[in-house]
Length: 125
Image 1: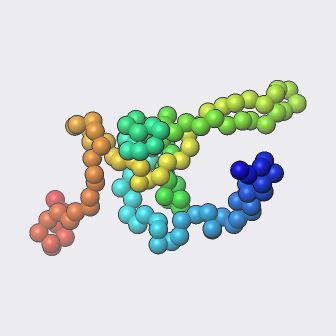
Image 2: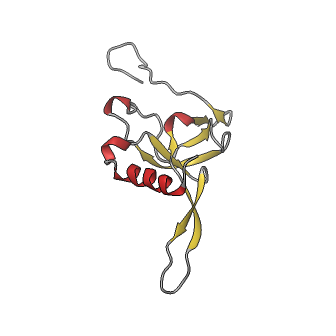
Image 3: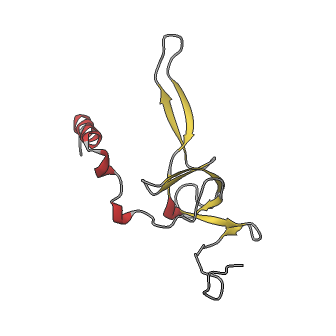
């Protein structure tokens, strides 16, 4: 079992790693995004699986999205001269592979695919 000082060392080591090591590699990034800000999505896995929400922000460099009211975590605000430290909740990013767009007609998750529609002469009407 690891002791508390070793855990601090591990945390400090992670914080020292450069940002380019913590982010996904260029070949692991999503190439064509089907999810944009304002879309209604449903979580497929995790502690909030099955919950739906609206996408607030898309983090393309991290392959993550922030969904309104989903994946809430508690954070601690540092103490100030006037007040003690306070706890607040905020949305944490969710992996884009763990969410799926919601179909408005069925109100359930549905896969999305890009398709060329037309006869091939550039007329997509």
